[in-house]
Image (cartoon, rainbow, N blue to C red; front, side):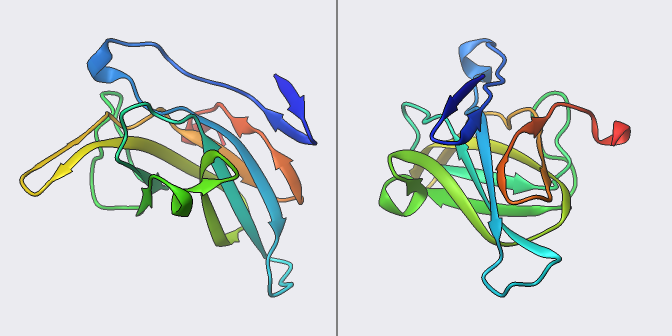
Length: 148
């Protein structure tokens, strides 16, 4: 665990075969919602840059099986571009401007190519759960959904 400028960074990752490697989510930052509503927050999540990514996809509250495959159609899929629009400072990130309170689950994968008929992805990451409550840095909870 590292502390840098008030942000707690925890790295969780599993090294698998090259076909099974995926981006690793790192930290979360909870801020007040712009409207001032007590039941809403802004959440920013950061992850490690994936060397050959042409983009990323984040799945919020999706069902992902142990093989790293999405099952069903539940949850929300968010595309994140590589470059200025998909970074905060120099780190890949996604800003969720309106997030409800409570435990939020995310998976991420890298888009490896986006040719017209050849779109390839890494597998979905392991789940990263952020408890969106108090304003400030938030750490990932490493628990199964059933344990929460």
